[in-house]
Image 1 (tube, rainbow, N blue to C red):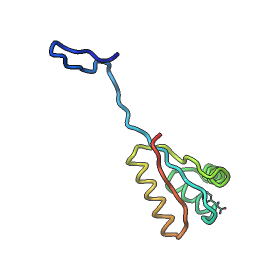
Image 2: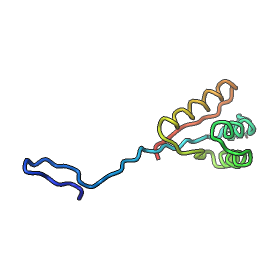
Image 3: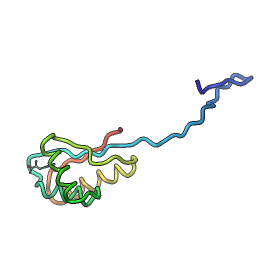
Image 4: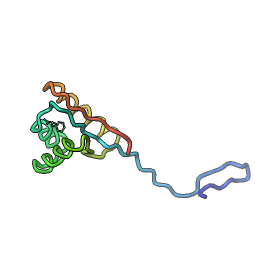
Amino acid sequence: DGKTDDDAGVITRTKPRTKRPPLYKVLILNDDYTPMEFVVHVLERFFGLSHSQAFELMLTVHKKGVAVVGVFSFEVAETKVGQVMDFARRHQHPLQCTMEKE
Ligand code: NFA
């Protein structure tokens, strides 16, 4: 199954494989204090959503507790999480943003 061994017993992979990088979900968590408009602004600014898309997604987080706001490479996901956490902290809001492997 995609492995052959040569005269010396060396096992080599023969099946052509395109290896895609793993993807990471970026999540926003609900809390009781961050203003709704601030979350909408975050989603527009850092995730490129339209105002109506951002408003809808903010409401999903507000109602369900958490939502995936995007799926990215590790590096991009890490950057987005950092940007959101930094922006929230600078505005003294407790908004939480995390990432998890898909
Ligand atoms: N629950 C917050 C409020 O009622 C709004 C909010 C939404 C916060 C999504 C965090 C994430 N002000």
